[in-house]
Image (cartoon, helix red, strand yellow):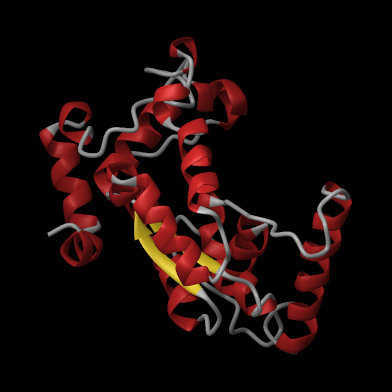
Length: 233
């Protein structure tokens, strides 16, 4: 959803161009009209896909590659809660390069003709732009929200999740939370479903030190310097 509207609105995620301020562009004027349509598109689609979700339930949308559209979605759904999950860009790069190498799960899912052919700098710029839009949405959002790092989530999952539930004002029993964390932990994933080339690959913060070359590290640290300085210095 975020990728659909974000890429269209900001024109080109890869080069960072934008034409949404052009009044002749379909989303360049009458913002209140098309934001209302985005809202309806999202909510009606969710109801159709998940008819059994109770009206008072919570629908969680996880869309890492759709973060470019986060500002639009949060503006169209201002009553929503927001979780801004951040991960070390070096580990993100290592994971992305592994996911789309020939024979890996990402390449198999997309097909050989659709695998993105990006170098390290392009991947790093993609990370910076998507994180930048997620941060923009987070800073602008007036409702309940929380920011956390993946590394903290891995180090102490229960404690970090308790902070998330508290910040979002969602009631949860501590025992129920602990059981959910245990059920979905990395350690409970069967061995044949995780490892190199698999969707569940490593889950090891700092694993980039073994995965990236010195040149790749220099590139991503240069491009993503603002994120590293603020969150990983």
